[in-house]
Length: 374
Image (cartoon, rainbow, N blue to C red; front, side, top):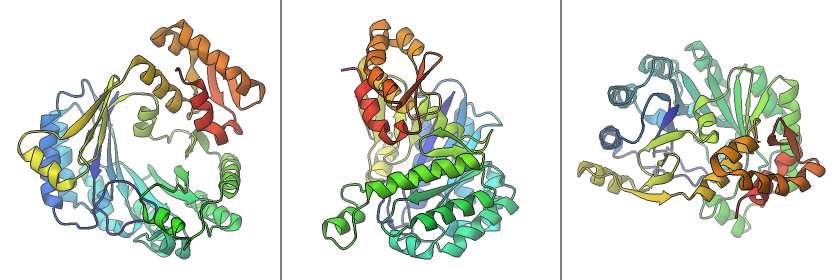
């Protein structure tokens, strides 16, 4: 199983917290689509076998026209083995979603949507500098359902300075009552060089409150468990049978190819990432060269990546797999390092697998780091 990620680096507005590569100038979108199609041909040897998932991310891929999406997908299908039942996801913003566009996406072959709602409260959306309104956040879910999408997810952000516990519950309740089969929920993170980081440094807005974020996360786990959702990864919740296949493949260490400016690729032994500059990316592709940097991973780095990603999932990390792939000493070292967290109840041992308890999920990064091979 392998996947393809396509980065569409355009947005109508810059969200205060975002540190992804994007441009608010929509100039050059047709040229970028052409360059991505050309990169498909230049990178056709990167993956072998079937491509089971395709994911349009960004940026805001819902800014593309149906024809532009169709052209990219046509090139992918002509170049790679893409089965008819492949999961094909499009990230979409609520203000881009109309019944006509949603039906166009279906006709293109898009069968899953990831909707960046973030909040159902107008004041939150204005503070985040989102392009959509609270009304659009509510209406877009009905629209995609009317267009025939039953497989879709929405993003929500918690732990923002002005979001109360009651408002957080209302956001989650609205998502559940809408019939959404999947939710991705993230704590607000202050990334360097973002507008949010500058506002906090200038003391024009309060910094994030870690205690509030922890409380919101704890409430979230409780509410969604009560509603029948499975927390199959720390930030991702799905009703039975509605997990994201594409993101699950990331966490399982499957190979994937990234197309477009700043997109990352992984083949198990090395990681590479394209230049984060639209004009230079297009120019290089036009000259027949993919502009990327490459990092070859040592065996230890591969093991540590498995620990970091696997520990975030409901399945956890398999000590048997570690022993087979990296040797018995590596498996024994992890077992030894995990004893402290097992005794404290942060880690659970189940059928030779280590996974985080609900309390351990609050300390995921620290626990993973403690289990790393040095």
